[in-house]
Image 1: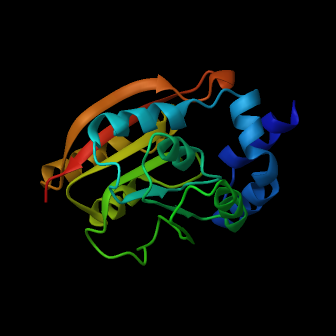
Image 2: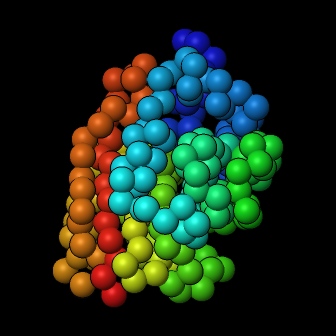
Length: 208
């Protein structure tokens, strides 16, 4: 097994947050090269384009939740969005994101607990590669709703395996039934081409 596939498998099979943090710390230096050049990671661009289709305001306050090394932030910045913040669990990944120079602010945080962010802070939140196996679960969607302004957008991907195993659809329907958001788009797209995985790419608008 190649090195990039081996470390990717360790990420997907991490048994706790500490193990996941350690693997990402180890992978940070080669993360972009491995995912983009070796594995065909297309989800950041697909999700970024979907958000772009709805978010016309280029000075909108955007959070890249689970930003990693900044692949999504870099795409949005190149498309003219200049007011982007990033949040991630791994300090080493945040250091790589900081080197790209595309974020107004970067902070460390855990999406599975309440964030130190006020309600109704962001015009849009995008989260790519975070809702996947061994990572953040569907309960974190409520926290993204809390920090997004009414009328704002939440765009996120969910890896196909996690979508089924963690029953994301039930959590998303519950939020909708509570009148907190409405679905605008939900697509099935390639996730990582090298391993044949797909993902749901979802876009919701906050209604309350």
